[in-house]
Length: 296
Image (cartoon, rainbow, N blue to C red):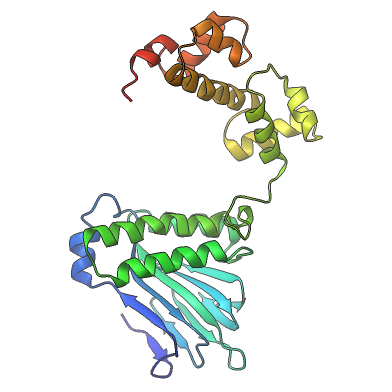
């Protein structure tokens, strides 16, 4: 595949690992744990002055570039994207592109080439959420996971190292897809009204709550709240609440000797027959059957 590379011999402090093709074919493609998404190349270029790459036919892999510091520019299908600290960009496989460091303030970049059965789907989902280019507000988690993947691959290409690194890759992409939810400690943060409503529901599984009461907690009308809730979770508020109640009931069934009637009361339902029907609908078996099936 034709491509142009213009740069110095290297960049001080650079890191680079290219997984051998025979390793990819024998240990990544054939491993069902990781063949959906796996790393082919990974690297870090600090202060990459004169860094320039052009691929007229694109790369065989998808590419993620994260600009940690400095500036640069990425061109994808003739559209230019200015890159600054905190920006990242996804380049789909087989897509013509070029990228270069800024002459005055050259970028420092973390980058990964990745393939697999769902690689394009991952790239597409990042693109749908952010466009080709996005911004990372909380970078510590992403950089930490990058370092973890790199260290594992640096140790060699044993099955354990490859599986460990590539299972981290899922978490790594999650920090780009959902970066707005991570604070500097790596904990989920930046909650919206639906997150607060879910917290409220989780704390009140022992109660019967109306849609109006739940919507009132986050100062939204019931109709608008229901729309936003289902858009985010895929479930109506009341259906989601029932799932939380059943989740709590499962714990009582597994870890206590409470009777079904008592468990029903613990999750805010006075009618044990209604509780049993709801539980069976959600879990696919009755509370008694669930308890008997326990194997741990």
